[in-house]
Amino acid sequence: MRLSRWVALVLALVAAIIAGVALGTLRLSVSDVVSGFLGTGAPMPIAVVRTLRLPRVLLAALVGAGLGAAGAALQGATRNRLAEPYLLGVSGGAAVGAVIAVALRAPLAVVPIAAFLGAMGAVGLTLLVARASGGRGDARVILMAGVVVGAFANSVIMVALANAADNTVRGAMWWMMGSAADASWAQVGGLAIFVAVGVGVLLALGRSIDVLALGDDTAAGLGIDVSRVSLGVYVAGALLAAGTVSAAGLVGFVGLLVPHLVRLAGARTHRTIIGAAALAGATLVVFADLFARTALPPAELPLGAVTALIGVPFFFVLLRRLA
Amino acid sequence: MIAFRDVAVRYPHRERPALDGVSLDCVRGRITAVVGPNGSGKSTLVRALLARAPLTAGVITVDDIPAASLSRRELATRIAVVTQREEPAFPLTVDEYVSLGRYPHLGLWRAAARADRDAIRRAVDLTEVHAFADRAITELSGGEWQRVRLARALAQGGDAIVLDEPTTFLDVGHEMAIFELLSRLAGEGLAVLLVSHQLNLVARFADHMVLLRHGHVEASGTPAAVMNGAVLERVYEWPLVVTRDPAVGAPALVPLRMKRPS
Image 1 (tube, chains in turn cyan, green):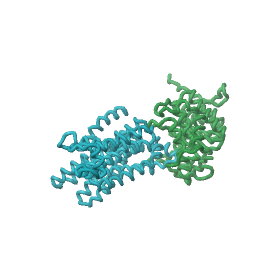
Image 2 (tube, chains in turn yellow, red; image 1 turned 135 degrees about the vertical axis):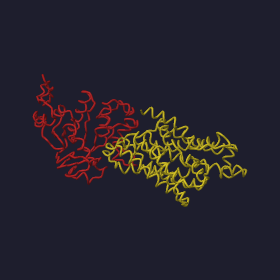
Image 3 (cartoon, chains in turn purple, green; image 1 turned 60 degrees about the vertical axis):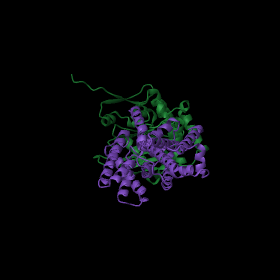
Image 4 (cartoon, chains in turn blue, red; image 1 turned 180 degrees about the vertical axis):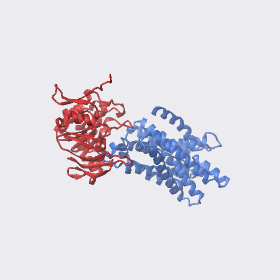
């Protein structure tokens, strides 16, 4: 991918972050945003920027970066252009883990770990279902397995919430539709660690994913341990799904949409695709979150619903092209 | 270079072993061809070499070292494999694809050095794929794609190249071009192990033939020795004759039409 496109990606993210911090019920100028960020100037913009909007915008950016990178790597490793954490049921598995941890009143720090275990369980189940039907290499079979696992995860969550108080159920439902509304600096810090580790591992595996994308036998002939590299991608993907789901609930279709956009922009090798998808995913989710909170004021739309509104038509176009 | 000794492979839930006591040698400077009907175990032989099919008996050695004791990457620096099927999922350019042949040498992080670039250039020269170096591999014709796959395998380096049905779906011209290239590579000292259904071409180009049937070696030797009408008729379960091609003098198999009941 050309350097100019990298620069455009970075500038788009910076613009999204500035817009995300500036726009809302209280509109701030760019200079307010900068002075608020630096802690100079009037106390009100400082409070809005530092306490409310910046953590939310950064959380959205990290969610997008994690989902974009995870989608890019999963698509490469499974040779499946429709793969992404949400559609593979991985995010659903992470949600199950997180909901169970919350239902058991586990400490907050345990939630992402439970989400990670849930995500890994979902990966295993999806691959098992796909393998049992003899179609591990078939994009549609893996997708169907993922959708089934996602539906199963949903049912588990419903059962887990059966005896919960009304407000807990309402909170859980809102969270399951995706939201960055409750962002805090602690959450941003926690998610930053998940995203740094997950994206770092995927970038490290980028060259191996290029080889893996040629098919298992060819990859083996080029010296790849197919099972080990695949496992590395799934674990890093599950880590990213767990981090993003714990922080902002279920945000679908970002991992599907973004890798395709960066491929269209000329990214072909996976290290480039993963890096560019992280940047583009961050930009997309920051804008989606901005839309979610400003489109129908004073109501706030669920973030996952906004990304689905963009992603579902794209999914149909893609499905038609693949057919 | 590559030696199979009494190799047996049995896939799970299969009644019959896919390979049973197969021994063969593939040496430098020669084309060794493995032929046989569908399901005779030819592709399993390649998969066993790649450790993609577990051996239940026997040993495969590479330069007298058991292949199982070599790491995957070490094996890949010695032997390049062009598998039977490879459907590109993403549109890399031909250049990028051929460069992936250097993966066993580069690993995750090392940048391509002069030796890597030289190996890639030589592979591109030998296979004459310059003309479409910038095209996406998903847009190539069948003949171009096979040449590009061969270029990737040659860029891999090593002293042996293993090809599983490299001329499937190719027309006569492209088929001959591949066989001529393999003959040239063997002439330059490479060990070529070729799995093929093209008995007549194999008989013209190979130095040594191995005929498989139901996972056993049915016949092995020079093309003249293996191209035996009675043996081939039994193995392929079809009436045929073996003649001598008047134009090139090589043994040639001619399958016969079934006699219709009058």
